[in-house]
Image (cartoon, one colour):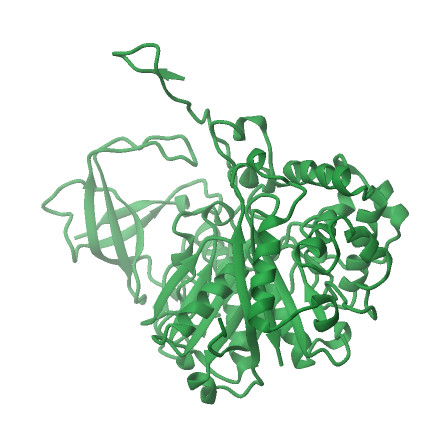
Amino acid sequence: MTKDKKNPNELLYITSGEMYQPYRYTLSSLSGRFLTEIKEKKKFLGVKCPECGRVYVPPRAVCGRCYARMNEMVQVSDEGEVVACAIVEFGFVDPSTGIERPVPYGTAFIRLDGADTALSHFLDCVDREKLKVGARVRAVFEEERTGSIMDIKHFEVID
Amino acid sequence: MKMEEVAVVGAGQTVFGFDRKETFEELVFEAATAALSDAGGSIGDIDNIVTVSNDFWDGRTISSMSVMSAAGSWNKDISTVEGDGMFGAVYGMMRTLSGSFDATLVVAHVKGSEGRMNLITNGMFDPIYQRPLGIDATISAALQARCYMERTGAGEEDFARVSVKNHGNGLRNPHAHLGMEITIDDVMRSRKISDPLKLYDCSPVSDGAAAIVLSNRRGLKRFRQKPAWIRGAAYCSDSYTLGYRDLADPRALRAAAQKAYRMAGIANPLKELDAAEVYDAYSYMELMWYEGLGLAAEGKGAELLRSGATETGGELPVNPSGGTLSAHPVLVAGLVRLIEAVLQVRGDAGRRQVPGAKRALAHGINGPCGQCHAVMIVEA
């Protein structure tokens, strides 16, 4: 319960408490293989559309353009190019881990070589001179990997 | 009002079950492509798409947008209904009748196994007065069941009889989650969930997806399937707050059904319908819905069931598919009722076919304890 400061007799709110609403999200075979490949081999897989040949990273089940089911997984590079980037100055607590990432940090959409789409992740760099669209980056992996997208530590700028 | 003509020309559904390995995107693709193939058309024949989803069940906000590719909406008009799939069908029907679109694909999905049913359904209640009490779909249903027993004298054995009938029917439906040969005793002895409801009075939490293709007369030439014409469609809502409602009186269903019957020219639904698919989320609901649908007089739902009229082979088989008790993909289940009604009037219902069915009813509900009801009548 929260009371109005000017009028302490007026009740204004009831809080939800610590809402607990857990899920177990389905991976599908595509995402399962994508994450396993990172965990076991530190390599990236994409999925290729049988009709237009586009390679989607991260993989999803359906190519929306062709309305085709995708199953064929192909390896792509662990290096690529920044297609969008930002420097985060105002962080927030990750609801799934309770961890607040120290600011500032770099975040980007990265098109890996061999892929037609971009993957989002962190960058090791907050230098505005180096952090640019078109910058070349390479994935850096965690030592201890668990089968999650966080097995990628970040991407480092290599040029 | 006489209806402009709109028909269901294609239907697809996945197998329903708990813990299906596919994502809901994959399930949507499976159901949507099955419906298109059943229609004898392809995604290019569709002018617009209606998806059905709920953010709490999906565990993500604007859940509708995550299935846009799987629903085939690339470069197409897509909009969403947050509620039962029957309301998606009603909305799809309106879009098809609007004159802007000749063919509409309606897709509904849920992965009930990903979240926690009691927490999610608790989330539908008002946070100030009701949610802190821990009320969920099953607890509110138990309250409604008790009200219904008080009003009509129906007993727990009557509810059990619904469970026996529908789970038995589910055995003949290859899409069902939980077809079972059980006895009244089995139901009575099953685990208490929320008195008077026991485990076999409650529908299972299922995963799956379903889709239909709707077309007006102009769009028909694109498809090859024989049309199931929608001859009547209506919906009506009751109060959101449970305590503002007479829980034992299906007032909103009565209003929706009567309107749909008028449109379809039906005077005596028990005699003039050949099959009905109703939303039996809990066993007792089927008896209440008999009354709301005018199949039984007030207070006589249990009597109708005991007469055998709604059994397979009876005067009006109700839930020949096994109903929601045999598979309850929330949101999808109402659309499945319509699909089952369509398969019946087409004569394509396989081992659950009601011989010679020409006209069938489908019913969907939204909100706690059947707050809102939609009724459709389809005809071959």
